[in-house]
Image (cartoon, rainbow, N blue to C red; front, side, top):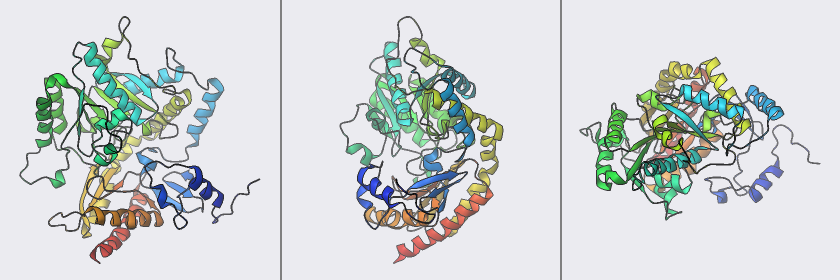
Length: 460
């Protein structure tokens, strides 16, 4: 029988087993050699997680933008346990069960406009895949089968399945798996920090119309956009951007998909990110924090107009997933939304957002910090070699800065966040929605010290 390690000791058997058998996602497995241990997180509580040695870390990324209600919510586990006693599993393929029905109705009451039809999935990539398939199928059933292309933004991440990957605008993620599902087209994003000062604020929205016209409106099924673009570092839209995109989509009979796998469920201070920026899409994709990640779950939320052709006669949206709308996940989601409502987590984010942002803005005093941007509890700090010219780092320098120093040093100092260079180098922060002044101060202290050390390393 295995003996549990004492506090402060490492369970070497877990390290050995992980190295031998666990294939980690988006990870350089060769990096975990005898000198570099695999980070093993064993416990969570509130805004914090603990490793196998008992060391505490501030979870400044909500695991992966998803543990919005915080770790260790035993009431969520209790909701799952109650559900097991009633119904462990049943599929939504030609059947229904109470929790999925109740959750769909609750989501519909929270969603804007006439987005009243909820199609459950097991996660974010599946939700995006479902939305892209629905967009194609909707136009086909309406007699416009040539409409199949999707327009997305450069550097945007929309998922890893082949359909979602066709919308993802990150070359390194796409090139390994080509040829992809045909139809993916890309336009500029809203990285205003890198725009010329005299560029029109709605330039990137106009680029969408130009691409639709270039492709031929009769071939374009959908435009897919995140309210705040994740990859590249929390790109926020200029004022009027989404209003203009909505007008363009309506003009050319193109569906507007709001990819809110990250931005929904309070991340921007609202249940849905589109509410933050005042637009109503035709389809919303969600996942991650729908259950605060206590169980895998996603959803595609469609407007009545888009759903209507599939609700008559012998029509069917021939698409689905075995575990979509799982009773346990549905029960967890309901309990999670109870927490959101009871504790007003969206209101807390709106009330504390300026304090969080002001804390990050103080980092502008550091020579390595070029830009601070984002919304709600979703922000990024862009790193530069020269603040005046906005000169960025080349690939070799970025590799050394982010993976050779920052990622490990931030973790060593007890802060989990994302040091990323899908685009220019950034550090991203997305703490649980329960985070408050104490956590902001802790984030500041770690970032200030580590980024100061990073600049000394750059100067060498």
